Image (cartoon, rainbow, N blue to C red; front, top):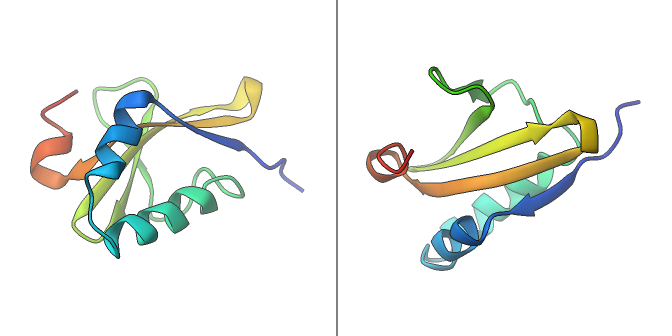
Length: 89
């Protein structure tokens, strides 16, 4: 059985999440919590041009996160719409 990962947010990701209206915020929270059990779900993909960032889609929003296997942590780095989240990289 795979260990359960701890999910952490950067300060920036928390601010981005706070600006998202419900019910979108609730759906994003569910998907992020699910990363604790499986940080590499089938619908995720590794971002091209990045060494460590992965992406999941939640409706019109994207969640960019880093998997830190050595310390069993998923770090959520950015949350936003498709058009905005990639420009901030």
